[in-house]
Length: 397
Image: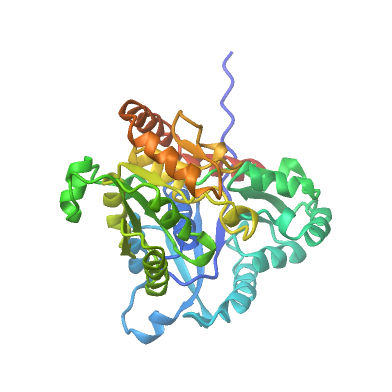
């Protein structure tokens, strides 16, 4: 006698609350949009709830949703709701008021089952008002604020706190250490969007499109260049690798100016600062590289705590190029020395330069690292992450 298959548990209707300016070049906004879009594509009923955008007030007919779809290169369809209040335009006032307005909106509408957020204030409001919620973070809050986190950990046993999604095991251990229930900690590495990596280009094709020398050796970095990213370290390393050009892509005008002055002061001439580039062009720079580099320094993780398993790791892997990075606990979750990357000693520009020179001289190793990076990337798409997260939400809701 056959028994009928049990139906799947229903999916929660998710209010994804975020207090940022959209669209914006900051990495955290890209992570939110890629995650929300992938969840939508995976079939989760999700609505992104953002503050009223200043551009929407200043430009008649401005369509925030269309701007988001275009800027972040995502498929149309993700629902985006602007809430009236202090407009998001750089004053940061909205970061305090939007969570309150959003909490009231979600409570009154009653069409949402779960709040999902990276915003601490939104999470606290949900915790103490009894709304079911999931908090996502890359931060090691247990190390940054141990007393406050220990206090919150005692309240994390409440049924309305469904869980915390963390971007690394390093972050998860930090939360577990201060008492958060381990069964409510879910590690999900970020991912990359395959559409951002299209078209796939050979090194020569990418260089021709960017106007770069096809015969040059390029060490490429892409990303933010604020002081807490320690990009000066790459200029220090470049000094010891005179046979290559260090092509640094990203940064605001003031960042480019600061780094240009630093290179000139040191007399380092093999550094090219390309400035901020559209998301659609970033993959061209990745494909143009001989080697991709993540600044091998300890401060972003240990001192500032603002960089844990850098977001750029994922498109770097997808580009299929050798990667050089620091031998650090978060990096080691994905990168393995002499398998898919070269891991070097943090804060040692001389050793880092020597390791890069040695790598550039070993074409067989470079090819092996690139191939293994590509293989790992296949498991790290936003689509794969969204399906895991959907299963978690279905289970814990």
